Length: 432
Image (tube, rainbow, N blue to C red):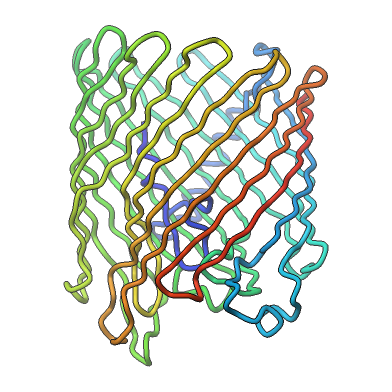
């Protein structure tokens, strides 16, 4: 399965917690369109599954939803700044209303499975209505199998959404378009050894002129050798390579900076079901990033992501995760951020129709890769804490009501980047 980090980048202006981007490769519009149309042509012969349904035999899945959210500090402004000067009002809060629809369609012919899925959401802001936008996400995928030893995926996708404000900290409407083309192949050498090749190309384009330097194109490749037990537990060795280019050079103190890099990573990976009620996923490795223009910005170090899931009873479950990863963040004194964090999330099913879920996250962010042009600035270091609690209620069949409360704060050694916020959100969805 493809490493989700291959599809993650966090340019300046995106929330480090929730804005995960497809990462770009070279322009492939004609190829992407051809693949998507081919998938649609084959899939139009029958249907698919996108949303959990009590009727799994129904191929066509549709869903409609509506939500309202109150955000106490939409632009993530520090108390040390004058909000009136930056956003034109002292009121930093807003209410956001959203209406959405989506669906999926799946067709299976022998061992081949084809999937189309898409969603669209209309977002309206009560106070800062200049931010109103329509976002969407579409994907087509072919899950292929040849004989008993070869299988994999081939897919393409496109997504549009509004960039976050955690690092822009200003009233900037930045609509981001992300394109993705990906493929994978698994070869079962024998009953115990599986070889996997993952390839992907990503393209991310920013709508706001001030964010154009963060447009990026990235090619990724990962090769994994896994030892597979009869219980489908796996332990393997993975090599990953990533090459990123930024078509628009970044201007720092009047100097044009090329942020292109090559990243190599060697990992030990494992998915292990410890017992019938617990499982463990792990990736531990060494990451090395090299910048061709300035080696002083290079990075090397240990990275990891570990997740443990435990369900001691049929109604109670716990998730514990820890990670250290690097992601893009471009600024005058940084080019990427090293993120080290831990999270804990319990889930409790009160009844067959009501579940409560919580999550606490602690994260340390170190901003690295100084281009060396602007001197005298201390290396930025942030600490983030996020607390979430949600209630999921299914009052009637196919209808869900989701209520969630989130409280977050960021403290930084640079005062203007510290902030706190709270959000309250209610979502109702109907699947049919």
